[in-house]
Image 1: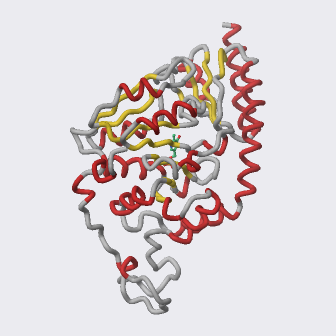
Image 2 (image 1 turned 60 degrees about the vertical axis):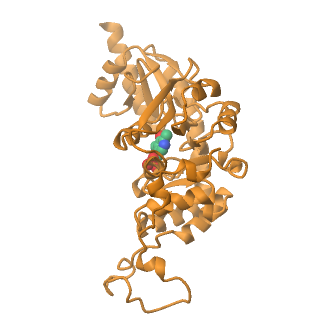
Image 3 (image 1 turned 90 degrees about the vertical axis):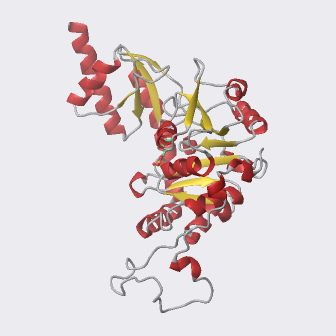
Length: 351
Ligand SMILES: *Cc1c(COP(=O)(O)O)cnc(C)c1O
């Protein structure tokens, strides 16, 4: 790996971050706060939240088996993705490499930051080789994005190939584990000690059932986390979000049960759909959604909208011709989709 200083944009490396009132006060417990121009009324929402979310990070650290200093919290994982570009990629000079198809935000953040985005097509099993990814890199490649389980394909990426990339690439490797709770494979957070160039992304938006609070996590070396903390907005995680996340962490046994239920329901849901003539294939999934190849994705998508059912049409995405991405919902919701498609198939048979 290059040194972190070599990887970081010089202006970011030299940056002296904004120092908030709550940053400067650290030490003896105080009871009178006249330092931040807050209102004394409307407690507790009158106070600025902890800029580094230490209480919350301590709780997350226990559940995720990492050190609090290895955690960055963002306004969704999307904030962490954007900050990685801003910290490490010099616009119009550096580039990043990613598998294709994958999560759309990597390309959007690259475009916003004016950074070249290089795509490497997956094979017909939606897998990649380290060799093909590394071949797409050059001396200006700062980041490689790997999403496992991948979105929209749903499958885990090959662990051997991910390790090969981590071993051979001299920039940062981002492993986006938004759906890891649903996978049999263990998290790459266990590898942080071995790989100083590894950044793992997770989120409260999927298995943790809290997309509304906007809370994403990045796990990496203390030095990388320090750089992200330097450039984030001072109070990027609001108090309500920190409180709700704490509550969800206390309920983590319940979340494990939700995950188990959704995985079982996924199997049933897939089996029922495969009985229908308009469903041609369902790709193997390690997530809370799956990709289904149907006879006519655009027609079926539009038909489902008229039935009040929304799925994700992925027809125009690489390798996903005539594919719909379907999230596993409540059994009753899934049954609604199955019934609607049965009705569609009956009508098609008559036509
Ligand atoms: C849903 C998703 C996320 C989560 O983004 P948030 O901003 O945390 O809601 C991240 N990565 C992938 C691949 C996703 O599908």
